[in-house]
Amino acid sequence: MDSSQSTVFPLLFISWGVITVVLVVLLSYRATLLIEDDQIFKDTAAEDHHQQEMTLIARKSRLTGEIIVLSVMSGVLLLTCVGFSI
Image (cartoon, rainbow, N blue to C red; front, side, top):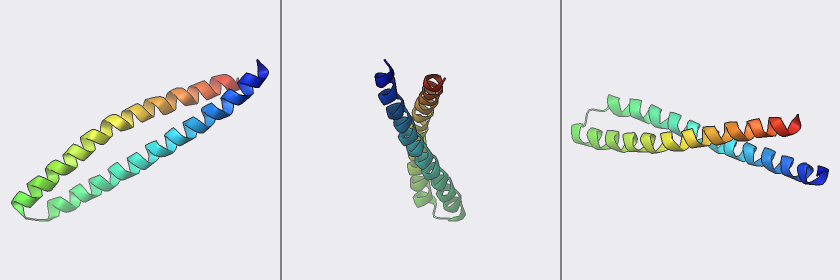
């Protein structure tokens, strides 16, 4: 039992680390989208502005679902790693 637990814990910890890094990258990317959104509002081309705004809204909404899933997965894996270490 001890050898199987010693191989499972590093795998859980590595998978938690990878998922958390991907989550941080997606959060950083979403933050850059918010900055681009602010820059679009400063431009005055009406039709182009509308198209770019709709594209950014679609990107943000697609990212929101992925960020929620990765957050839940990261939290569950972290709690699992803590449970194995106790």
